[in-house]
Image (cartoon, rainbow, N blue to C red):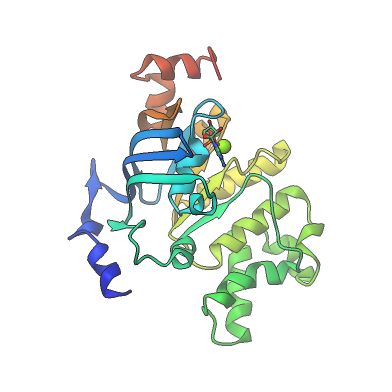
Amino acid sequence: MSAAAAAARAPAAAEVTVDGDPVKMRGDKVKVFYGQKQALFDVDLDVRERMVTALIGPSGCGKSTFLRCLNRMNDTIDICRVEGRLTLDGMDIYDPSIDVVELRARVGMVFQKPNPFPKSIYENVAYGPRIHGLARNKAELDDIVASSLQKAGLFEEVKDRLDAPGTGLSGGQQQRLCIARAIAVSPEVILMDEPCSALDPIATAKVEELIDELRANYTIVIVTHSMQQAARVSQRTAFFHLGNLVEEGPTQDIFTNPRDKRTQDYITGRFG
Ligand SMILES: Nc1ncnc2c1ncn2[C@@H]1O[C@H](COP(=O)(O)OP(=O)(O)O)[C@@H](O)[C@H]1O
Ligand SMILES: [Mg+2]
């Protein structure tokens, strides 16, 4: 890390906790604009380490926008402007000294529609470790590929055809391949934007099971339009409405005892 990047770390940042839980990422008064239009208003949100945080709320409320702030994917949208502070282990991820490629290795992303590269299963997973120089030789790369596929719950299904195209897998397998690809560069945080919305119920159940296993080792933030899914996979839930974070809390409390009327209306199906 450069000296400037080190300076961007707040003192004792790694020690930040909330209710005794370590905070992995923090949004502090996050505002996002697309041109003149403001999409997020002063969002304060702590993402707790090794937990699954679900972002829920009606379509267009800013869930994906907030998720993309966490690994600076919004940088790729020309008209998008982000204000406020976002940190990873206390480090300001919008500091000019930050290497965005390195940030996105630490904070990986899985998209709504499975998007394997038009390459073999092996190459899909090996790509990241190769560009980040994580393996010294072919044997090490083979190990990373196998263990990433294993962690994504896909190895047994594909071990005999690693040279087959990733795009030839079923939708659910493709999404687990994309999760393996994210895992292969040893991220600390995995962002998932409606990762099951293109999958059938059985493939969805597999991915949800996987998310539950992954939280032992990773911090996960998942956008979902399914309240049932949020209830099944997350420990914390954040409810967004019209660009505001209305409330965040233990998932069970959000669904059984929300503090805000807007949350109550949403979870009881009055809108959205
Ligand atoms: N690339 C973009 N350009 C312009 N406006 C956008 C863009 N992406 C999102 N928005 C707007 O920002 C708001 C929040 O969108 P989004 O974060 O995608 O919501 P959600 O994921 O909750 O459905 C919406 O009003 C949407 O139209
Ligand atoms: Mg979205």
